[in-house]
Length: 352
Figure 1 (cartoon, rainbow, N blue to C red):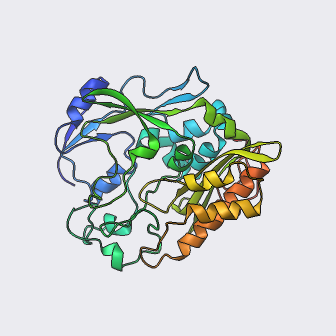
Figure 2: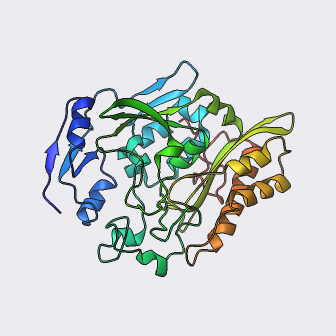
């Protein structure tokens, strides 16, 4: 591991100034960063520890009925917060489907948003990877790539974004609050992550020193709570990243879908909002026919980046499954295996 400086600022302003220096990165729980450092994938020259910054570990209710979630709130604490789970059940289910209980107890909201791809070639320093070392090439293009992107990829990079949490957040129009050298600003979470293009080393639009201080969920997003699900297909039953995943939220009135929110995970370098599919569902009767048409629209631009043609069909099917379960109504209890397409609904209360 490369030697590095360790800085523990007392304020957000101090943190931003320290992290704006070349080679600096923020450290919270470190559940992703420390692994990258140990493997030589990340080699920062300065760690800026934000774990003791005041005010970033709170869940606050907003005047519009929404929530402001501090960037240092732990994933497990958020998932089990009664008010949050009741208003945003698909997000809570996504959180509970990610990693292990031990990691959820440590990992933070802000860190989850910014975790890096789990592409094996990115983690293998002997492989060519444009995301890790720009200009070296992408060994995934001709390698083991069945789990790689089918939407938004480029010749430079075909990696996918690993977060479960981000998928329903993007569907529900979540916003991130960012403190930077120019002051505080807000940005739609959907705009935070970048597609690879010719600069895959840049995962997000954040500038040096930018610190995510909070996540905002609008009050009207809670209007989907009665018909909301997050469904995830993975290669083993638990503690695995999504092969594909889907978040679905519906507003159903008098047997008609008045509004729909859809997003896909595991298919691109960012959580993928399926707006064309949402438009197809608005005004339709909930049912297999409408759900299949929406799923086809969501994947209309998909193309394999290697040996992963199957992911296009799989993504369509998992989106239909998520819509079918959402239309049936949000369960009172979390499934025994959260977000699993094959789990029963026997489980603990979501807000227990």
